Image 1: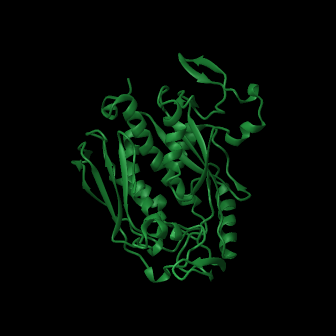
Image 2: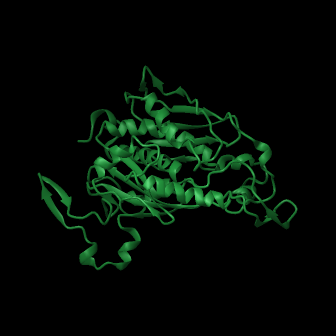
Length: 364
């Protein structure tokens, strides 16, 4: 039962959707990193439901830092953050009837019926609140090294946003937005697509695009610990992520080598590439260009339409009409979760390359 990720900077999540609390433990961050409590709150606010496109379940996220922080800075010991669950309605969940595309049945098979099934239990997106709180501290650590991360909604069915172009400028723009799109006009189109699905008692998925800027060249390992491998490992831990592609991804299948290759040149004494089709990574190792990748986000599996399923307790075929409070799309709220888990992963990659004191002494 593995709920910890990382080698030098390790992240552990805990809690269930309708349990007393969810939270995170981060072990391995250097002492002396500024802990910006306002940033933690603002990141949690981005994840929190806030309108017609989100679930009616709104939690206050009154987080508490129990250890690892003193006088506004990390101490170097494990950081423990707890976030209470204060708005639950467990009566909406009928144990034994498997909700399609949820983990109800697989959790039953793994935990032999002892799992907390309410609201999806430990498999719920609610658990990502801990990742966002801990990720905010990682974001602060990376900021001191000149590294920034941003994610935006790239598409939602036929509604699209502008892809990353002026990456640093656009990441800065996204950091101040509750609805993460680069082009302001995209918000209305994407919102309408989500609301159309909600009106049909259905849900909708889409694609998001993430950029990590400021990473030095030379981070990562070949083969099994490539930067793509480690980031993908972390990203696929988020239940709604069903695909990850770096650079131009699947578009490589339509390219000639002469079109796909990123040509190198020196610019102001630094090696850069003329294009960034490979998303800032060669041979599993960063080349100094922005790391760019896209994630496919599946439609929220909880929908109000009647569906075929099984009762795994009575071993019968049955029907289900899911009740409760659910998002017609998680694509807006998942963006800050992706930023957070990427920040924690990048901290781990940097600590492995330069040592855990890199956040104090800088990259040399």
